[in-house]
Amino acid sequence: MKTATMTKNDAKDGESPSRLIDARIEELGDWRGATLARVRALIKQADPEVVEEWKWRGVPVWSHGGIICTGETYKAVVKLTFAKGAALADPAGLFNSSLDGNTRRAIDIREGEAIDEAALQALIRAAAALNTAKRAPARSRKKSG
Image 1: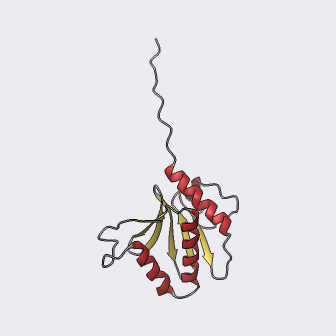
Image 2: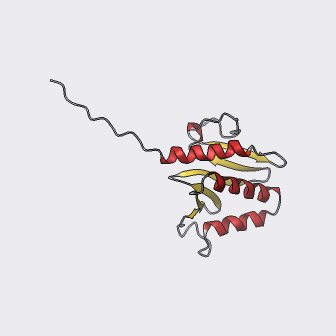
Image 3: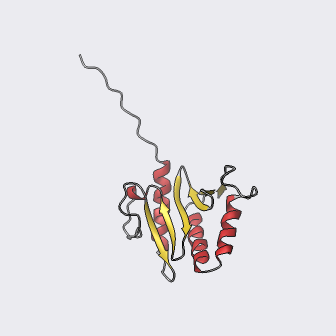
């Protein structure tokens, strides 16, 4: 797994994003920390080339050719927000939040909820593939006549 660099606004005392995510998990110290640690492990397993980042003053971000998802923690949920979730197939129906927009989709995981690990890893791989897909070159138009 690669580790990204951070901007001055994102870094805390020059710590690496991975260490900052470790600290967040430890700081939470409850089911949210355990859940964040589990989804982080699943993300790394699904995409060994994923880059961990720390953005927006404290949000874990996983990227590969662009943002795959963020891992936010709230009092009642751990929220995985997929940057291009609306463009991803979700046959297992994991997306259960932020469903109205045209771009993002999210998965809210509540205390005690089981994670469909295979389906989550499939979404991670699909998001990375979408980020890294080469766009088809524009066709040149020949003038007729």
